[in-house]
Image (cartoon, rainbow, N blue to C red; front, side, top):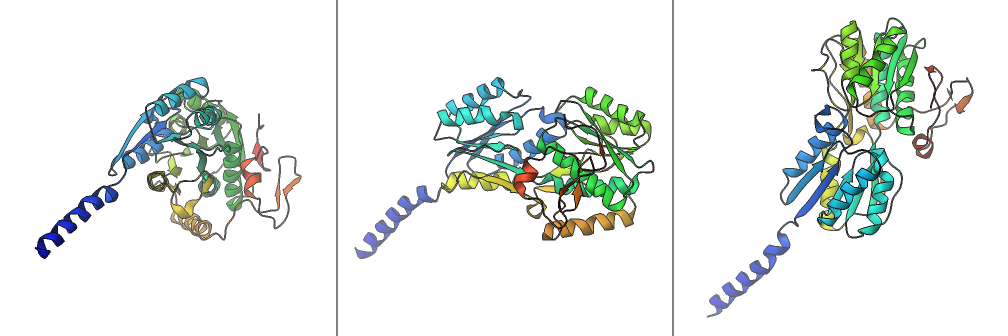
Length: 353
């Protein structure tokens, strides 16, 4: 009789424990500014979404090519109304629309990429892409023959300006004679416009094209002219194999998985997260065959310093375009200054407008 009672109690305990051990089901939504087939920004985020989809108890969905502004607000409202537990919005212009939706749905967790505003149920996140941009600048500075690098840039916001500056500093670190010409497209994803912008830079003497754009258009332009390129977001070497030297790239999977687990366990808190190469969120794509081993070795040594925290990149003295010292000798620029950067370093040719 005692054995029967013990077995019954054990069965009851197992029965009560099983639901507690089961992972909570969670629905996650993503909002993308460009098509996932862009091979760039949205593609990189969607690779991470697919990694979430493979997790037990996690279902995901996405809406692509959502314009910044009112359209994005409607998409996020729809996700919140459908009971999504977590919503990621992956473009700077989604910030204010997300903040409005977050206030209406306090039980939903919202995460905004690249912005700076938060709420009790809304955090923001980004990666220190300027670290990889510095490394790609080293490659470009070492490989240029004309000492003129072209940079096809999206919008004149701190994120993009910071990247151009880091790229320029990296190029100057190996080639003090180099200059960087910037053309603004005012687009995130417009292959034709971005390709034409690259051509305009090639027409004024640039022999390497870099980009802060989501399409491979600038690299295709470089290959057609027989010069080299530096990509962005993902390894786009298949689009311009003869031109593509490397690219600053994203790997969002570790961060997205960690965020989902925090939401599921109830440990998520609103904060601003800015992650670097040490966590693998930001990296450098494999080198093209045209990059000499000596250049690769120098770049990889600097990458190791960045990961170790001994290379901070924005360390003075650094002068602005007018030749005036903007970061004093020995001073490491604080994050708040980097996040609000609106000026170009010396050596950049172009305006911040």
